[in-house]
Length: 287
Image 1 (cartoon, rainbow, N blue to C red):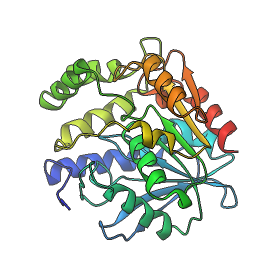
Image 2: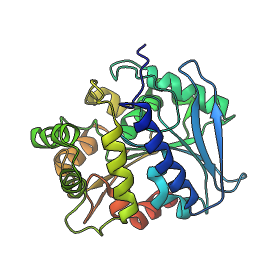
Image 3: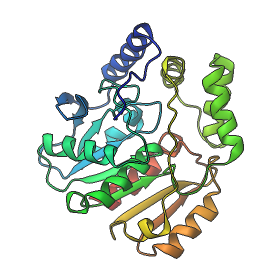
Image 4: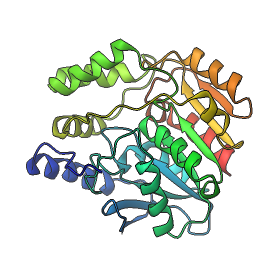
């Protein structure tokens, strides 16, 4: 198991965590934070929503942390108890352990987090890389998952070459103009411009990251067919990482029990592009 910091330097880490705390200071609902001890290191979790409500674990995408869910938590916390961990090896407050994506180590880590939180069969929702982690967890530990929601999971198809090129360029040349263009590229051209504070946090994280050498494998047809019958797949019609129509057709052909919803005027960052539409879909599915 590889253990290294996701940050280029301690100064970079301090800048990201300052932006993290600033985002939490504007968190739209009352929250608490927890540190859960795991064999992979400590995991930081943001918790909010009514204690008696059904539990939902939220898994953010790459080069991110739990604050990525800021556009969604106010609505979701009306009917759900939310647990948003900082995924290990990413730009949050959790340990810097970076298992390869070819192993099940991320799934074992999440199982330890779920157990440490005292959750019994929570629902799980993941966006982008978090979607890959969510379905790996559900496949490895089906008895630990009630319902599963995947938001533009990064593992449905091979990523487009141009997207990979843009990602590498953004990591290699993290100037504000390059990163602003890349952030817009991830969204639909018809989506609302995100708040400037969201872009500033995005800029800080991208400049702070130590690039991850591991790549996410495409989920097999067999694994798609074994996902929980109560699974929701949300895709942005304008997603740039793969062809949304082909991805949706593949899922519907291989795993017809999965509910697929394609959201207009939304790109890969659809939870931020169309937060209310995504929130309504998730609340209708989980509540």
